Every structure is written in C-alpha cells, then in structure tokens.
Amino acid sequence: MNTQTLFSTVQNFENIDTPGVWVDQNTGQMYRIPPEALKPGHSPLIAVPGAKNLVRLATDFATPTSKVRSVGADHNIFVADPDANSVQSSSATS
Image 1: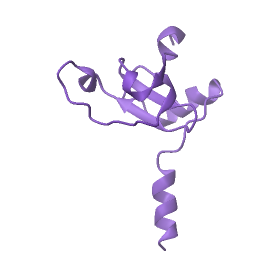
Image 2: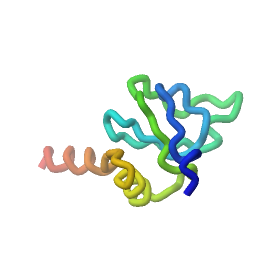
Image 3: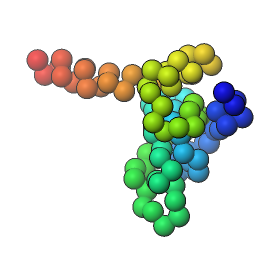
C-alpha cells in the first residue's frame, strides 16, 4: 500500500480534490468520494460543512468498509460503524 497516497489530508470537506474513502478524524464519519463527483462542471453530490481534519484511508471509493476500518485501526484512526445510527434509531423506536 502506498502511504503517500493513503494519507492525503485536507482541512475541510470542500477541499477534497482526490477520490477515495475519506474519514473525519474528529468524528470517525466515513465519506466515499467517487471520481465523477470531482469532475469540473459537475454539481457536488454532497456538502458537509462541519467535516474537518479529513484523511484518505483508501484510494478506491468502493473499498469495503471492513477494509477501511482495518486500515484505520492499523494507524490509530477511528472509523465509525456506518450502520450504528440505523441500529440505534430502530431500537429506540421499538
């Protein structure tokens, strides 16, 4: 694995200019950014104004979550479980 491309970092979500799987180091929230979302003239698919201290943990935006979480764990970067919110909200309504 190429650590130079692995650990691209940006301060804000709006500054992402490379596709891949990005993680907010403050919250562990994971964002998958496909190449199409970064092409000139394309509208942004999403905007996350509060996302800061982002690090890219995979160059392929389709990398399985388990692999992204494993890479994060290897480098002491927390990656939140993307299904945790849906599990909590469904159990809260039961």
